[in-house]
Length: 483
Image (cartoon, rainbow, N blue to C red; front, side, top):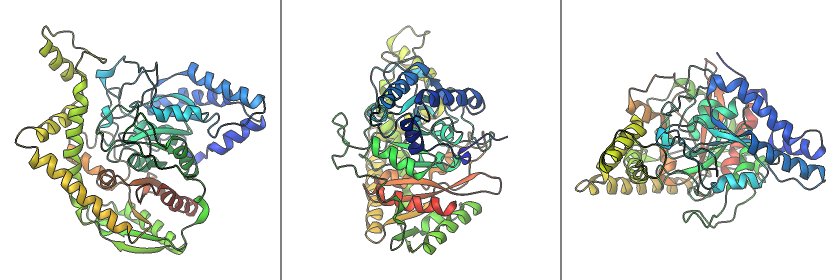
């Protein structure tokens, strides 16, 4: 069973802004229509955890007032957006998909969300996700799984499954997700939308409920490359409230989109086309590579030899950082507190045991072990050393090529329940995405075809640090060649 998807060609960001500026449309009417779509479709998909009609319509009314006065409209004027529920909005729920934050309302708004609203976007609500962004299928949410709009018996990918599914089903024009090891790119691939992993430090993490602080990144989902470039340009930039955000100026990411790929050198790493890659995914990705070659790009084989160590390296570093970050959720300051505890220590234990799901507890235990006395050097320190080798692989490759092309995921979307009892198999769903996360480079997934069952397939484009413009230029060509 399927529902309407992004293939119905929803209005673009530019279309919405132009129609409001001309008086053809009202931001208020666009917001109301979005809520009607959510009411009609989301019972099947479960992308939204909460909606806030009052806040959204207030923002829409501000845009309509500007238009009525003939004033210049901001770039995202009236654009309906959804926010992954690991990003805070003052006064609204922020569950991170976890029971332990049930009922908690954020006292401040994430910088990326502030920037969206300052640019005129209308925030419809908060989106479902794997608990604390830990998962590859969106089945780890304490509030139930998200269903893939292309096939309701399939996963949307994770952890930002709600963000990807909302765009694919037309329940938002743009959404924000987060990516720690593939949590934007993999669901973008599974749901047939565009999803961007910005360079680490390009977008502020202020207001993001942390999973792994050296890996977490905030990025957009949209139905087109141009819209993704537009949203990235809005949310990118230095933030004094995030010490890891970069002071580098933000370019106009839409400026070079239509330059094509003639003269560019594109690298194809052999390690990403080995055993385990679904034949239909391989065929779709190789077809896109051939099209780029025909469009004037030079395609050359490259090697990223340490990629085979990426999954174990990631699951040491990410779990270690999660163990430290999630120590703050103890039943005292946030959300859920166990009622059947009669001492402080039992309250801590019971609250965390009942409040966290199985996957989160698994990762906390793995990370605590990796950081424990006698094991730190053998695991966490060693993983950081391997991380450096992975980064050097990319630096060497980018000395020879302008961008790197790989599959985003080894398979199309798998069935709900198919991998929930096999954590290692689930972790391998991110085998092509964790390397960029560890290296801090930018990446995106752009649709490049469909399987024989009609399931979307994504092409991953990786770029140099802070070279999102080049990556988007290649993606725009891929998108154009698909139409």
